[in-house]
Amino acid sequence: ETGVTQTPRHLVMGMTNKKSLKCEQHLGHNAMYWYKQSAKKPLELMFVYNFKEQTENNSVPSRFSPECPNSSHLFLHLHTLQPEDSALYLCASSLMSGSYNEQFFGPGTRLTVL
Amino acid sequence: GQQVMQIPQYQHVQEGEDFTTYCNSSTTLSNIQWYKQRPGGHPVFLIQLVKSGEVKKQKRLTFQFGEAKKNSSLHITATQTTDVGTYFCAANSGGSNYKLTFGKGTLLTVNP
Image (cartoon, rainbow over all chains, first blue to last red; front, side, top):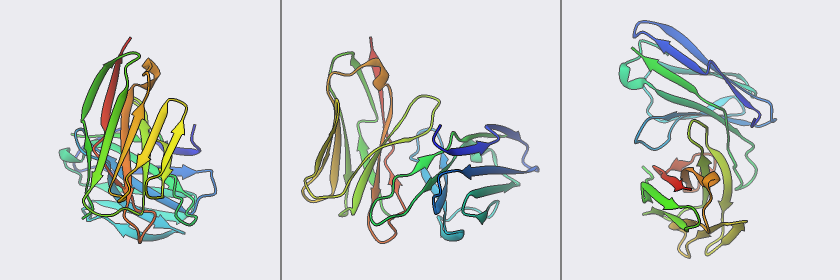
């Protein structure tokens, strides 16, 4: 248990569905991240939020929409996804302090798009 | 954008053998981190290296950061079955110290 929780753990959705992934951190961190992990690819950073402000959008398609209502919660809203979006979606958080930036990952949501 | 090359992609060893994974960047890095992901699990932070030529040890694990701060390695002495998993390096090239670029990882399997 890393102090970062994600729900749901598994999600199957059709291409016309709308769903949301939720992440919550109980560590008092000030930065939160969404990553995508596909087979045979490196972990891909999608979004970064620092003190609730989005500071990075790594050229992610608009069918992924993040929301960070406060520094403890992060959502990823999904709509009209494609089968190639099937992957493990990982949330992480960190306490940015100088150059030290250990990231704590949640267990991930395994997403399958049919 | 920033790219980090990690080799090998896979490594299978007999229990008790040593293991090394290497990470290389074409640009100078501010720091580098290492993570381990067990099968079916999520990445777990192992260590961060910041200084040129830095060497850190954690029990059987030895981490090195190159003198030019462009490469790093993780060496495991006398592997055990509990070492099974994928080892990732994650590079920070400075500026935004919260943005990490991950290598593809090295999947280590250990034959008991």
